[in-house]
Image (cartoon, rainbow, N blue to C red; front, side, top):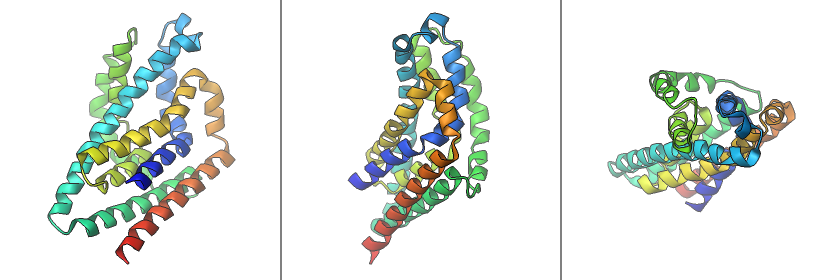
Length: 228
């Protein structure tokens, strides 16, 4: 379990270049919807950015708990360990695909992100009810909806949550992942232009892609070695 949590944390952090590209527009819109005196002061803006992101991570944890429960339920219908190994290996393969996408080598994962657009279209109108953001609770509620934005990075971690062993474990996987994404998105909220530029640097993206692929290979190796 410790290995899975560490992997989720690192994927969240290294996948930050994807987060900045995927969520950059959302972060920018939220930032610029605040009052000028808040926008121009990082210490005034920080509580709002924390509220947005805590709501987002809460959504991740709720979905992770659901997937963890589903995985353990499905596993109980067969022999659990082989099912868990299969899901862990599948999550590793998905991470390799994600790494190829981050590095700009293969974009097949985009079709999976598009599959989630139908859910997002139903939920996004609720987010508009909390804008323009004036209070911290509005920022948190907006973040709660934001957590459902279609994202291949999130999907790869949800597959890992399936193999985690239960609702609590699945929730912890998504918590670790969410905390990994936090530094990049917090900095993006305060220094939007600068971090958007970094996220588009090809060498930054390739480093992140190779790192995520390496962790995917490691997860596949762990799944295979337990079976041997």
